[in-house]
Length: 234
Length: 291
Image 1: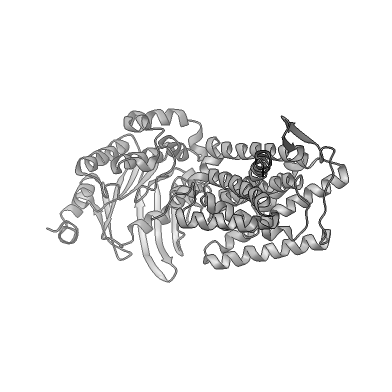
Image 2: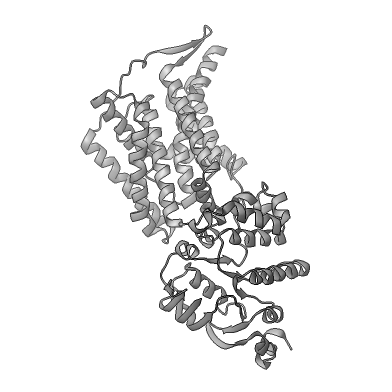
């Protein structure tokens, strides 16, 4: 479904990613783990078209998307729940959700999708006219996920969805990811919560200082000594 | 000074202020979304004034009827200005963006000088010297009343566009969270160009309306750029209602200055108000404070 080959990414002179290779098959959950600053978010942004790689190629469903604008990539069915949620704080909850459905692929079924999102997160329906910035952290995360679903993506990239949330809500978020995957969505999950995400993932990649250093099934990496030492403190 | 002199001055100030508010909206929209300070603000508005002048001279068209065409032409001008020129300096430091727009301002003023000459030019329409007499003592110029009504109508359209239309909401989303807008797949550069186009269209409309009230000449422009800055800072940078409220306040303070002291004191009053607001409420009357 998604194929990243030999990708380099620079911010000015600073190299964020070097020779990244990764592939995602339809229906998988892929975890990307790594320390802060390892390049996880950069990789997500490169796939989403927010940053353009200086070298290498990114293909989605056999279409080259390396140099496409972020809007065109969303249009192909690549959605994102970004790090820090990136909601529109001064706009209402409903307007935030509407913005998720501005892309053309989402317009036809906007109403149905909205109903589904409200069914999934009734609290968003209750607070639909409230400014999104006044929601709690957990509710904002629900809004970010709901907004992404409004775009009816086939692949969702979650970037640190559990960051700054209470444990009970983190559980809820992971359950959502599992459910979405069951419903047929392909998932890329970037997480600091390594143990949980490896359990959830079919396969996982380890990023270190902009390099891909390990790759394997979630189960393998869960028992890999290097991973256990470096990321799980075992 | 009796009550009716004061009432007349305040009514005149209020009506003029609504036109100022419309003009300041153009600045506020552009700054609020693209974070570009449009130093060619007054100049673009003067383009609108000259356009309305030409239409009046050639076709005898009332400036208010020139509004749609002036707005359309300046919308296209603004759209291409943003998408071809300004977008290229978006990543540069602020002062370099200022230079670009200040240069544009100089070019517009001089182009107007070349074409229209330096002399003030006025129009004479059928109702130029008519007035509405309310009761015995309150006299309101017809042209000023029409100008204010047009300004309110256009401002209302603009606020409605940003509140209710999908495109308007998408533009607000870009202003609210740029990265968020990219994340949901909004066409940010297109929306930015639209925003500049809309800002310029508002100025075109404001220019047409203003021609009902004053004579036009190229050197008018820098003064109106400054006035619009004063208004949006008083009202709160980036706040659209703030621009309207600021416009009304400035219009009324100018009118008061003219009757209490003398007309040439009006700028001193505006700047005095500006200093007062900066001292007491630096984020502007309707602005949000940034911590």
